[in-house]
Image (cartoon, rainbow, N blue to C red; front, side):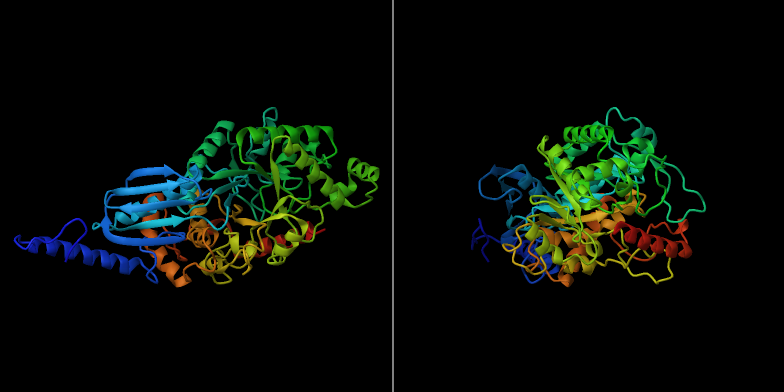
Length: 539
């Protein structure tokens, strides 16, 4: 037997060396056998790297001994070489280095279980989709920054690159806007719900400071993650209406909602005070968030207020629009687009395939049931970029396991989303990527009506987000089988708990859910209210 860097000396007793060396080789082979599915990936990385090759020998040294910026690896691509002397790293941009570090963190965790070292080899990697997002609904629950930072660390570990912050809602306003103190004293404070109220959220309050958000942006940047702020317009604004009812068509006093549903109150785009508020709001947003996109909402807007509002009626009459409130919505989004353009920002909107107020060059998130895959061709025809966000695949607030129908832990409003549902979903629906270049990526949504804590947020997000990362980073066609992925996931469970402090075991018994706050009777009412809300939103 000859090993690299050492020949055999016939005059030397090498039995001890050979015994020790053979033990090392056998252990390395056992390691490869336990981790390699189909003999291709000895490193057990999630998401699967594009190209992995192994060479002879093992390494226990995962310190970066050489790194170099080179051309041609793409915005998030990287090349990594594992040698006995350490790790050699190449990348083109800081984002590429950030993704390489995510891989390195996973390798370090695996090395802790492998005293004989990891196989030497090379990894060359880059993502399939440039947008791999996760939405956190801080509008409904003001999560402490510590919990958001932990969430970001897990995002980075699995190579997500957009943190979508849903900052404003019917149930709370979390964005600081100078000169509008009532947003903090009223809009950011949700009182306890009446005992008789169904579909209620827990009392919650809090507004992030400008510095807190700027620090979060900086923290994310180092990890290759952009922060997308969302300020909902013109609906989902009961917290704003409670603070400043004069910004709405209906100026009747409102309250921060303590329950879920679809509100009918809309801001009035015709009032000078509202226009000034919007300018001030987006000026604040651009000071905090450097990302060139701002999500402006646009979904679930019952148009009754605009139909009745004298100011809105006058604006439509001036343009000969009659009762065509969709035309008015089109004008409103155009005005917001122009406002954002002054800050070199572009809007993102929630998409409704049946609405006509979208414009060429915009970016949308398709979420409504039944839209996919029709939204692929429709947005392509409209000249609109698409981020795939299907409710029944990527709305991970829905339970990840099947409960009996009479179990109060069953998620109100729909069926569960299982791990296999996430893993088997193809965002391109089998289409060639060159035929659907307008699909920019995917976005997971963690709507928080039923997620009042960071613990439950992590519980509901993972391990399903690990499954989605496989098809967001790599090719859906070339991904491992579900069974192979589940084998990889098993080895990640211990590492995930050690690194992030959360278990990945998912059983009926260990779900930290809100069953003590709800009853089966209430769930039935919630489902009925949800259906009514969807019907109202379509009017």
